[in-house]
Length: 187
Image 1: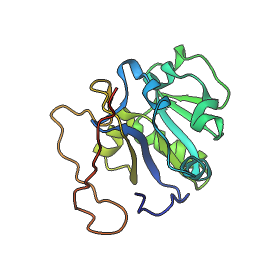
Image 2 (image 1 turned 90 degrees about the vertical axis):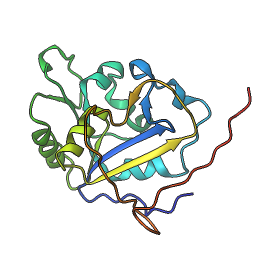
Image 3 (image 1 turned 30 degrees about the horizontal axis):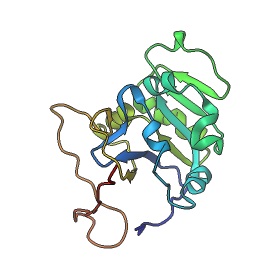
Image 4 (image 1 turned 120 degrees about the horizontal axis):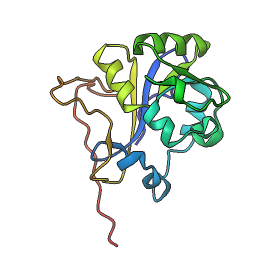
């Protein structure tokens, strides 16, 4: 079921994640092994994001777990990668990576300028949450994986935060709930 238009490269700030059905974008300690077994991306989807992404903005926690600028989309994407951190001085330099110590809005401005009219993909739950709270996101793309993790890094973890209502892109009522149906795989 894919009833949304293909992604466009028009300078959006895009929060993009594959997420477990229970709302986790990574396992404990940013573990991503769960994505390597039994989950198939939609055909052509990675190519779509590779073509429309001009820059990536991530956070230090994710970078420290996966310090490889050549790993974005399995190495299919190349471009400027920005890592927002409060301690850039202790980050190991990496080709194509700029460590920023600034306000999140300034980090977005820098990434948009580097993206050359294409989209900035935000690949950090923490940064995405800050941008959502400040109204600086243009779109959220979620790919819901058929797995329940039970623990890990949530897409949005704002204790005491307010609800953020979204309008679904595509056909039909943009405020309607989305129904998915799965069956557990028997061991």
